[in-house]
Length: 327
Image (tube, rainbow, N blue to C red; front, side, top):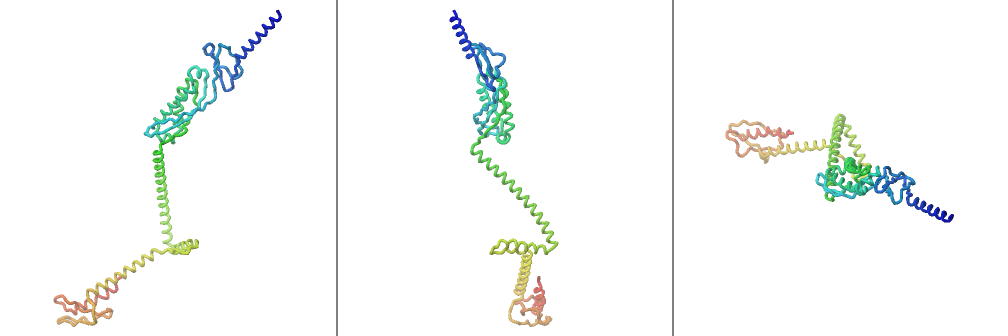
């Protein structure tokens, strides 16, 4: 009798131990346990720590409450300004209601992934290329709102969404590079023109100051010579004043004008030996030829009617010294 009681006690203890082992569960700190008893959801999920369920009756599913980092596959689409791009992103989300994540959606990870892909395609179609490249913060916020709206019904909260990379075709990259180069060239030219304007104003002020003191220009010339000679060059560059060039130009023009005047007078009177024409009858002798003339002249072969050759030659000789005094 005693042996039977002992055997029954051992059997009961073994069954109890098996029951405890079969129903014992451990929920980790970052998890929550959702219990379904005979297919029905229990009111409250199991908290972290040791917990018990009814073997064969209860079924517990553990849900991770940590933030999940999910990469969104690259999506190829056409932007609002008809540019083909390839964009990928990353989604950060977490489960805030373990019961809804188990009951209301079959696989919340797969559901969030699909919503993220479709939302990313929608954002690409509504945005311009410049917004995708430079205004990503606004696009990230819009993408987060689009994904978070259906995810809240699944017990999932979207923490943040980030666009990782925007891939452009090679032709578009070259076009953008040329545009950027042209923009920088335009800025450089504007800056250079502004510098030239400022430099011209300063040079004008310096020239006005030097015009008041002519010695300042000579000192500036000597400073330039010293600066050039400091390099120990075999060739010395000496600036040539522009005023001297203008003086030489004026002198050359005066000499040329004087030479042309002599040539015109010589062609009009003719040249030859020192012969003085006789006075024609009825003509008044004009006197001896002027001593200032370097050469004697003779009358022209065809004098005017009614005028003596001597009088015409005398008048030409009187006008000749005035040609020598031409400027």
